[in-house]
Length: 272
Length: 264
Image (cartoon, rainbow over the protein chains, first blue to last red):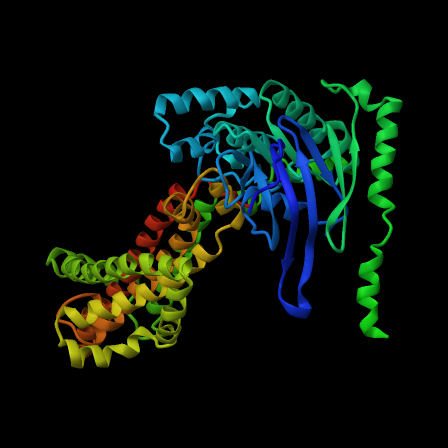
């Protein structure tokens, strides 16, 4: 079988995921096809059940596809890999390790020398502004600090792709805005390809090169909205008419989705 | 009006609620002693008073019998307990980590958990003789059963996201087990160890009551024959104090090993 050539960093090719079996099964993701370029920052928004987390878990290698495939650098994804870093909504820091030990976790597995580990962890801990907390346990950190530590941990193994599943979802609005600026700052300095899932339309527009809007039941691609605003993004930009215009488009795409017509026919037929 | 309210909470009239707990503990202890003394001194019940028991304790310590009993009881408890925990932890991990192992082992664990360890004593004596072996076996069984369930619970309740987080950082099962599963289940294991020690201690005394030539349980059994109430009291108090001391040690170990936990 020859694979269609693609220059994309990440390429979803007709990816479907079905959960359960027989009558009780449901289609979490229906034939998603999407190419993401190297160094691109893509945000994914959509109602719950639109399959955005499923898509991300498939790209991370934590969930198998039912059909189709995901290519990373032209190679099919089978299981997690060090070139894809993942940041979870619940931070998922190891609570028994200090900030530094968390950041060094992946390096330790790789067998990086202690001196090199130290150098790398120092760099990324300072990049996320946690130098003063390097030896603190996660329980002493605030939610925002925990997520910064998780970001440093993901960066430390030097992935080319960052997959972020509602990373700021558990933070309060003020902290969230600060985290967005810091993430963009980090991303500008350490450019990676990012897929960022969120349910916050503002956040989606503020961060992204492109906003991917998904629809639910079954989870599928609905619309791709490019964000033609330059980086670095600023507060003025956030309040600008251009931003508002894109925001409206995304909002409309998310909240005024037409029901999926053929699915309704399929569901209703057995009843009549 | 408000002045009065402030005064009430001020330093002037300190209520009992402000006393440090250790003082309250001491008050309760002295009070209990006083009640015991009063009841026995008034001859409301035919029991030895604090003075008689204290005097007997001194005698038993002086002639070396109490230390000897304590040593033999502790030896049995610790041998059985350490063997039980040493087997329970790997078996619990096995059950939590491998579905097959769980399905094979769990029915036995659940079944034997329903049998009080003491009920096994008659069988143990018949098959293992009357020396140390049956007693250690019963204690081993008691601590194994309570610890294995806790370890197993600990492993199956490890947060999936932590495992996924390790996996995406490049960890294989071989790495995840020692670096994620074991540390994450330590709090559960320690709870199991504490329960295990409690049941081991309860079991040793009962086992000695039935068949032994030394130990605190045996001493009480002997004292019962001679209507020697002070010795029974001394033994009971020693059992309580030793259990308390061991539990405190484990509590301190628990605090040290799980200081990373968020406590609500």
